[in-house]
Length: 267
Image (cartoon, rainbow, N blue to C red; front, side, top):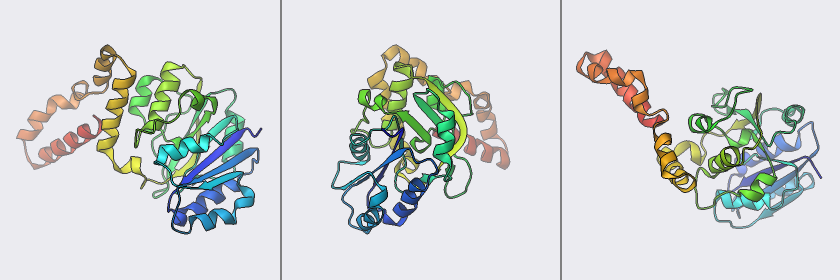
């Protein structure tokens, strides 16, 4: 059994699919299997997959019910001890990523690495290496599945919730870390170049709505009240200054407007 399973899902993204596939098959560590799930693409995706068929352990092209349905389908064909999703448009940061991860993962159930903004070349979100991952971490920090390696058995207990459009991966993190108390390790390794044009990067309102729905499903009301007060506007000292800023000159009003927008985003 391979130690790692890398899963790529794709739909009509042949333009970026080739780069994703090549970043996987060119890894210096070869103890992995590669699964590609295509959603019945009508562009050149299937012909590209066929070009690399001898380096892909399993692939299929058929209609699915959405991103998380495709990811669950990929998991159904996974046999590795650990799973990583490197979806079409994303790519491993370097050919040595799996080798670096293998030297660090130890007996962790979940390993969080960093990702890099594929547009700017800068790190995007991420948790500081060796940090303790708590529920507050999951609320505050940006965690991308492209930079994460999960023990495959986690998904046997918590498959992706296909009723969600954007945050089923966040739900899995909460279930595994908060409820199952899985062993987590955070490393400084940059795992992936992350495509910021993806759905979860461009639909912030739906993201917030789904997170609220998941919280109501998983936690009792008394816990939800605490959650709502984590990093709310009232805990930020600058909030008390906003009324005064609004009354003052042009520069202060610009600061007021900017601060209100930031608060609206993080709330």
